[in-house]
Amino acid sequence: MTKEEELYLTIGKKLPGAESSQMFGKPCLKINGKAFACFFQQCMVFKLAGHTHAEALSLEGAQLFDPSGKGRPMKEWVQIPFNYADEWNTYAIAAYEYVK
Image 1 (cartoon, rainbow, N blue to C red):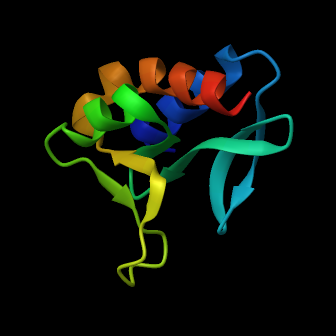
Image 2 (cartoon, rainbow, N blue to C red):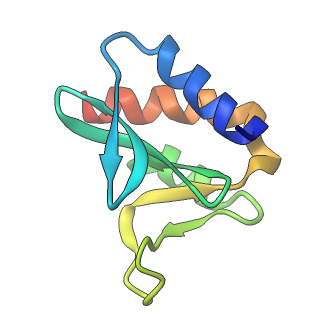
């Protein structure tokens, strides 16, 4: 298991009621049956809105999540690279609260 995967799992375990699941065949975290974060290409991906979404998207290397790779990104989902792992927990909490 990579350090990126370990961090993803650690973040998920800290959020009350968060469940591990799958989304598009990728590991994800859900609350009340709804996905709020996932792990993809050594990055974490978060469902965000408003100012938090804009802030996350402004990080260097961050992008809208396009799981198919066919130019059809998911508008609310932001893929954040491991360079910003120190901020993953903050975005996970924001996504958790947004979806909850």
